Image (cartoon, rainbow, N blue to C red; front, side):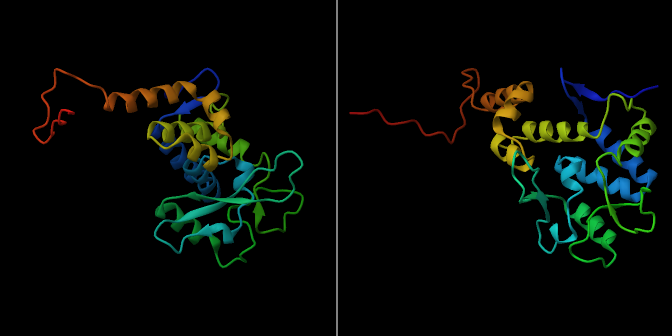
Amino acid sequence: MRRSVGRKSARNVILSDAVVRTIISVAYEENAELGLLVEVAAVTGARTSQIAKLDIQDLQDGRIDPRLMMPRSRKGREKKITRRPVPIPPSLAAKLRDSVNGRQLDASLLSTSVKRRNPSSKSLRWGRSDHSRPFARAVRAAGLDPNEVTIYALRHSNIVRQLLAGVPVRVIAVNHDTSVVMIERTYSRYIGDHADALARVALLDIATVPDGNVVPMSTAR
């Protein structure tokens, strides 16, 4: 029996946290390399093309608030790769550090052993579609439909999770290498839910007894 993917908008598949955790777990069962890729994708919401460009030196874990210096996507005529700090939990930082194995700082942070034209290479960056088949197997093992749930669903889910947690839209846009306009256009339904929750906190309810600590305003003279 197929598991529910949680919530689904008109265009994007949004996964519940429980489903995301399941996919990450079965990805690690597939192999550690895939597990790390999927966990980084789920935690940061970054595109796989960005994650593949991460170098070991982009892992900043010698601090209480570890982060990744995530490469931004090249757009238009832009050739230089710029980086932006994206927060990650200490648990993921520790896994990434353990996977380094003494490699050079400019080597790929996340590597794959997927066979390519150069089978002698021991450390390769993830290519554009290297993750497709193994991720589909992980999704299928999680009881989901790989034709419906792609790795991009992790990005959509991360954005929605942050929206509902009250993270400002501009911060979400910057951390996900996109624009506020795109966030508002694509996830307007969830922004509406978030705005309603925020406004409800400040609602005046005359049926509620005022707190005794409230000091009445003095009458102007």
